[in-house]
Length: 310
Image (cartoon, rainbow, N blue to C red; front, side, top):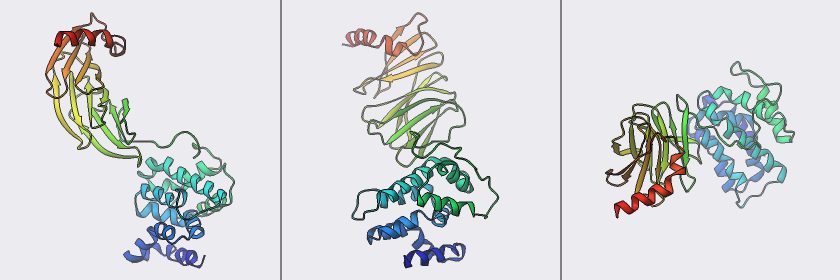
């Protein structure tokens, strides 16, 4: 506990600290876990001053990961009550990450708005300290008015400027690809909740996206009448498939990743070779161009086309 008070005194003069002392404080959870100092680690992670300084001095995700030193299985052990409190604080910061990345002063309202309904010793103390913060004017919630930390929502990913039209997750659950009417796709790291790449190339809104079974590539369809194939690891375009005369409403990939099928407002469905981008076949749909055709007619049409290709 002596160590904790020494650190607290340093945090009170955070702005005047040397770079070495600043780094020491920001990385202290790691060192406390390695030293087996469970009580000091729990106290530090429940301390508003530490949370505030870490948020303002580094990335939000780094603070979220600090709590894993106490919560994940390790050689140190903490009580069930403290474990619960730390989970609440960690989940609160995780839920608020998209807001804090834009405006870090929202930390105060986010803590109160999400934690006021929880009554544990650690939560009461951190909220008491939060209310005393006066570094900038801020709105102080009187009730728990925001989504609580133990709800089903884990994160909010924010970045598109228009409506999102489709979302797919890679088979290993590590990445998410979102398609939008803003003409872009975004690749997200699901574990950290951060944007990895923005894929640009389409000149109109994107109507759909599909991912190969190995999670390495995705295919997007757009109202601009094109299909684009992307490398998810590099965040780069590989090729563009063009032949439709109107906007494309949906796209799909066969499980083996060899064939791409597209449906369009030009009342056709087209079959493409994934690797070469070559057009293999055209199916005239007699105005049945809705997205549902990819599900409703896939099996029959694909078998017919397969026989023709052989």
